[in-house]
Image (cartoon, rainbow, N blue to C red; front, side):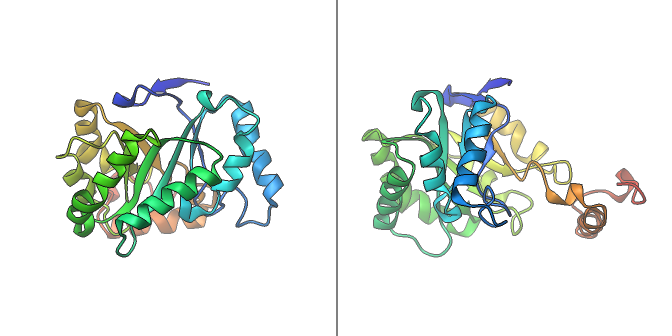
Amino acid sequence: MEFITLGRTGLNVSVMGIGCGGPSRIGQRTGKSEQESIAIVKHALDSGINFIDTAEVYRTEKIVGAAIKDFNRGDLVISTKKSTWGTIKSEDVTRSLERSLSHLSTDYIDIYHLHGVLLQDYEYLITDIVPILQDMQDQGKIRFLGITERFNPDPQHQMLQRALKDDFWDVMMVGFNILNQSARDLILKQTIKKNIGMLVMFAVRLALSRPQRLKECIDKLIETKQINASDIDKSDP
């Protein structure tokens, strides 16, 4: 397994992590038992992966917590998130963090994100919610602060472009893969300059394994001008 330093956090993370969300939820949405999902996480860790990303809304934190009990916590990097969909209050964040700590069977979280932030909510969150997270950092419950975008309504990464103007984000999560590469110029060049750790959501898409679905995705991306038609052989994308 290859490892890399996650920006200014200094965390040494495997270049491949295990994501516990997505369509599968590590098997919880495809008929697997909790024990089978725990085994998936353990297998990933046995294979050399040390980075795990989950979120309260995924409902997989308890599975991760059960899986990591047999491993040295200090060898792992755990990332989880608090959803920002709808109006959240400071007490919501505090309760969510405590639940996550309990579910994950840990007394600290390496990276705690505000999850799926939209541009119109950003100013409220940094004014009312980020100070709460910083207090949790001071208490040692959070090591580093992260923020993730909601890619579908924000394909030009406007929220992250705004977030880059602030200096308290240690890690950002961006939508980026072979089909969606707008972040290369809009976000990644700036995060490299600021030494912000970058995580990629939907790095591997189910669409790539289903030719007809892949074609539909390509057609939609061309139609919405997210990719250039001249760059793609539509007969064999």
